[in-house]
Image (cartoon, rainbow, N blue to C red):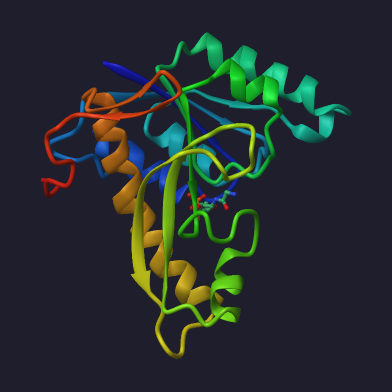
Length: 215
Ligand code: GAR
């Protein structure tokens, strides 16, 4: 089946949603998609995402960015681990390091990210605070193919949420997280089934409508 490597830095709630939809681990979906997470790589050994992977029986690796003076060497070490898992797709799920153009081009068309804003709004950090400061009534998350431009690659899909009158960063972040846990597994399902592809430098979709309800 479709082989997936997930890169993480933090709590791994998106990793958990992906494990679940692949039928891996304790909360596994009864009707999993035809994809398998074959490895999880973290740049932080204390990332709570790592025990989630281990509990699901998935191999893990830690490559600490602090051990490398140059980004290019850090990225090269990550590539060694990732390529040993032979992935069809590399998924960034709360991975908080900027990747070199060499890394991005090595995985051209095989690298996607989830970002907590409605891109092209709020690339970079502190997206929830920035949405609140702007007085936005809608916020959300985006899944996109990764290109060398930070948070600037072609958007595959977005999940919109409302901003409530009394929201603060935490309440808004929580709502966006829930949206992410719906959106990312759904996109992985489209990729694994071949309905969504990267072709000639752009997104290709099947004619069938994508937004069937999840089972
Ligand atoms: C998610 O909200 C994700 O969108 C964000 O980090 C969080 C990770 O949560 N990613 C970025 O900000 C990327 N620049 P998780 O570890 O619980 O999945």
